[in-house]
Image 1 (cartoon, rainbow, N blue to C red):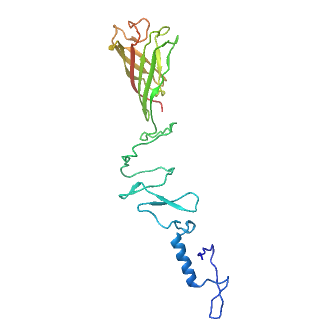
Image 2 (cartoon, rainbow, N blue to C red):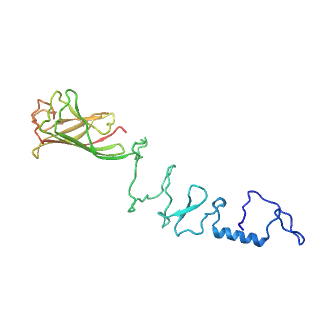
Image 3 (cartoon, one colour):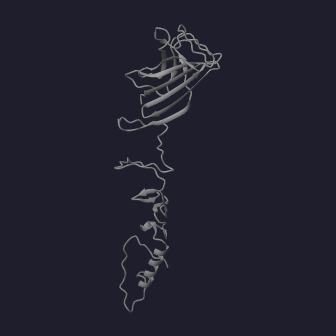
Length: 264
């Protein structure tokens, strides 16, 4: 027989030598002891604070299967020098480690951020990481849109918090043309912070030889950057000023690298 686990305390009539045990009276003590032993051997039920299991592997942590009718175990994290594995779970509360956080395990070493940034106003909170090696910048101007023709433009960036490291390679094609505006711009992957302009470096390469250098200007709060040359002629001018002494040819390249602070 199996032991019973009543939900409330029962009262029983005292058994005497002349009394016959019936349904209203407690079972014979030896039968009760045997039933309790059988339950313990078979695994104390979860509903009564047990594990429902007859054994657990060494260094394992028991946890519920979610159905409330059994517990299982797994191994993997380190606790007091012993390797254990916790079940996969979502931590919804803030964690405040008081010592080194070690993510150096062969299968670890990664911290994942959400695809949509959850910005923090705390200066000491890292709230974003993103990298993209196949970003396609937008090439535009204040006047007549530039024609890249068979030219190409590719970009890549890494964003850590608000700091953005951004690089662009613009390769001229045989049918690339300019005109209509001095200020051609290339889009930023993230809008810049307001309050101050930021600068990057530019190099124009003709036939493998650097012929001009310049600056990339990221305006305060801007979503694009524009460019000025610094080594051609006596005056500072736009790299794309149609009156400037730069002749763009097929396969010439514009290489841009800029580090700037994003708005968020």
